Length: 425
Image (cartoon, rainbow, N blue to C red; front, side, top):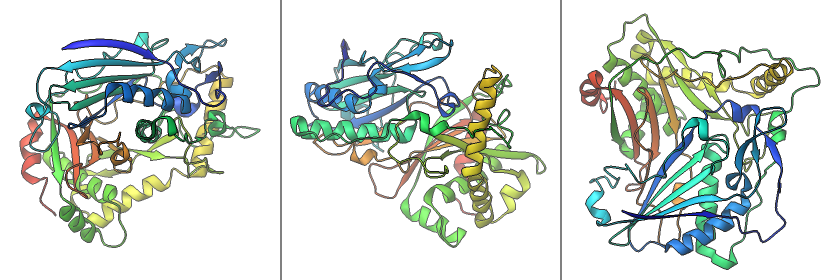
């Protein structure tokens, strides 16, 4: 595999937003993991040229200047985002096989090893490119784009918006009309004049010491649920129900059953909640950055297994509903108090292993709009998941309404889960 690397600078057509600023990490930024988040997009031939992709990327990076900046340390010794236009790392590689030879029957890559830029070590995150992209060009002309972005720069909602902007910039070329996203991070974390946290954020979003995650041998699997299956699930729930809610209830039931947990044991799911529209006052939906908190629906095993789908969906809804304006303001006030006391805050981790789960939903992300000019991606997929109990919901690129669920399942539970995952209670 032949490779070249380039650091692409933003191409500004208007005055540079935030030029040179040292933007403090908000509490929402600090509540996310200090990691690069990868995603893979696959395009069959004919795919746009690398030059067109790079030129569009320069224009898109000018719209979202945080992605062309760097993590830095400010005068208080705290991490910030330095909007210094150092650029986006682009690696170009040629792969000496046809794309069709490395795709599964479901249209996803069978092996993504080597298709992403090399992820920096955590202690090296300060000063490296926050957005790194590898353009893997296959012999047939097909393309696999391996992209990683640091989570302190943006959440998944923001990255979805960036990707659609990049695609528009490639399609439109010099006629590109840049959007005007909301870039003021400070507005997401304004404490009251007298901060008054009322919820236990120290042990929910942050922890001083995380317990060691159990060492399960696990396997990454992908399960497809058809649109007809999802419709049947919704009918079981009764009333209005989202695809996400009914599928999560179903998978909570089936994973719990496959794990063979005792009836009195408690199990919970960590569910990401977009807080933009839930804050009081709400934050514009085109805000670029991080504004996600987590709900934790929690039930005893016997209830997960025996309750109706409607009741389990109700427990999920109730937990999500608790992430409201009051909770978000309490979270922001907690951060102000912690900062005033000089308290170091570490994002919570290790909550998804058996008997628990964590779910990330990409169902609302607009990846079908990531069309660089020759059509939407044939597939988009996460890499192998690193921790048992993690699930990612992805809309199928092959059949409208189908959902692919990527899961990390303990090896001892895989057979039992696969036997029951498509059966309705």
